[in-house]
Image 1 (spheres, rainbow, N blue to C red):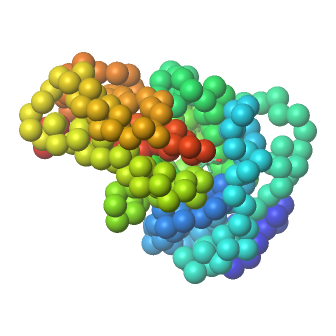
Image 2: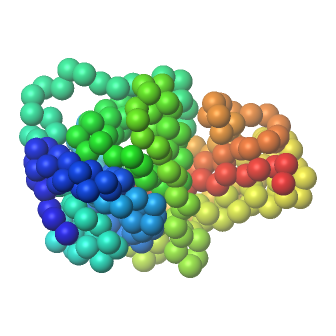
Length: 283
Ligand code: PAF
């Protein structure tokens, strides 16, 4: 496995792979890799011939007051995880490589970035779509892999790729969970043991939603009330949002019908945690 730190070196490696007729997979990450990232790399290894994992803590997607400075950066351990999972290249640019001059060009997806996390993290999705557009232009993958845990991010990136005719496919891989249901996340390591236990209530609230839909409840407000009740059992949980939205528009819905996304964002101590489930109420 090679480690490329510059745009020209990763391009050189990808061009050499292309000359051998290989398809290119990209797994964009901010490092602090865990089993969720491993599942993305493994999917990329299965579906493409040459896998690039980018590791870049993208400053433009952090809002003022967020955890940019303390975001974990265990680079050597990350490289080892990539190597074991079968990646061919780790692309780990510096901020100067990615943003050599004041950035004057931004990619903004409208509407889909306004609800859910967009309400609480102004500018976050503009940073995500801009860095992903840059990574797609630098690496030129045939397929890029993202996790369903960041559901809004996945939907926004798919839309950017469609709207801008970017020549790649986006594959969304299922959320990986700990045995007690907690979605794996780099930010889980901010939790102390007590907070880690409390964090399981995030998925419990989503399971409550699933149970109610399975039982035929269609009134969204009733479901949201019960989901909040689950979260409110835990004093350390500060709810940011609990929402049930249409998967196409991400707008709130009154009645459950067709495919819906139930999404939760909470703060527990130092960690902001998000999770979601997709439910097809027709099944
Ligand atoms: O999901 C992430 O880790 C980041 O938002 C991404 C897609 C790597 C862009 O920086």
